[in-house]
Length: 121
Image (cartoon, rainbow, N blue to C red; front, side, top):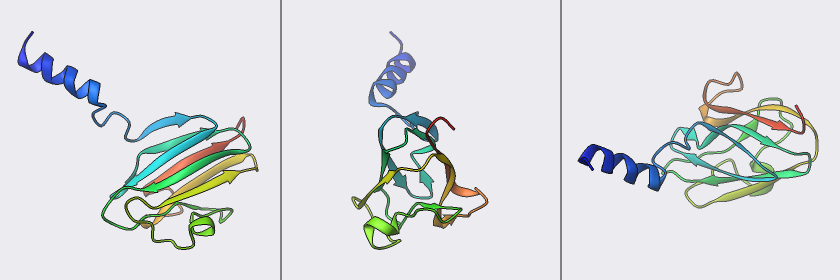
C-alpha cells in the first residue's frame, strides 16, 4: 500500500474534517462552535428535539435565531460561550430558523451561520 493511500485511510478513520459544514439529523444533536464556524450548518431535528451548542474554540461563540425566537443566552446565561461551555436548547415549535454567532456572523446568514429545521420543514 502506498504512503498516500495509507495517509488517506488514517485520516478517514480519524474523521478528518469531513464533519465540518455538513448536515446532521436526529432527536438530540450536538453542535460544536469552533473558531468562526459551526461544526454543522444544516441541522434537522423533530419537534421536541434538542441541540446542545458546545464552545470548542479559543474565541467566544453563541447561537442566536435571526428571528429572535431563541438564543443560547436563554439557557446559558451569557452570549459568551468558551471552550467546554454547553447550552442545551429544546425546540418545541416547528419551523425553519436561520442561526448565527453574534461575533462572527449575521442575521442574513453570512459568516458563522446556518439553518435549523425543526419538524418536517
